[in-house]
Length: 304
Image (cartoon, rainbow, N blue to C red):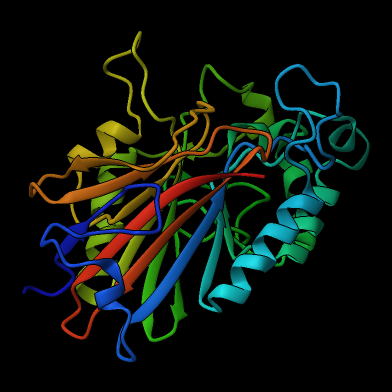
């Protein structure tokens, strides 16, 4: 079996069977490496749980409940990578009062390791975003926003490599086009670069130079746009690139019960996932690496 060849099963149950018909438990030997990827997107400053009388999300979400759930999962598997796909800011008075400080401090306490930049991160201007950088004890990733001529220069990296239980994970970020969505005075000289071209370049480096076992894209491009068929989105990105294993999305507030499996340029599987908004759900995807570097994955959305 070729290195990092995929056998993917995305059923939202724990009793999993791969394409070969072998139960997932067959891979759980002393030589199998297990990585759990947890993720959120578009939390929009929802620190508290929804009230008990909320018509749709009664008692759901909230930073405390998410923290309890994350810690429970960490006790099951110590090899956890906690990620976010942007728009942590804007949506409740917490942002209006603290300007993003509270959001980043709480994400740091929960042990987030990386996020990308959503359009609402610019709601207090690029200066407001830069002011919150000291409160982020995690990586801010964006490969297609060029901040060289702005105050954000030096705070953002295109990608980061994480090591988990001997698994080398490359994570990079992508942001939505700001022109026409965000007032120019809010993002100033930030340059938007083509996400497909940038992805091909970054992933080539992560795959062939850095020799990553797993490549994850944190995308704030949006899942799909029915009324704008030419607009770049996660679904299109998957089909126009190669060697991305997982796209964690945001921006469109798309609720997926489990990851969508799509084909890339080389007709290989790509997982695309997004868990709605407001911290209502936590995404979980488990990867199992066997001794020959083959991989099995399982993903689901967990209500917080």
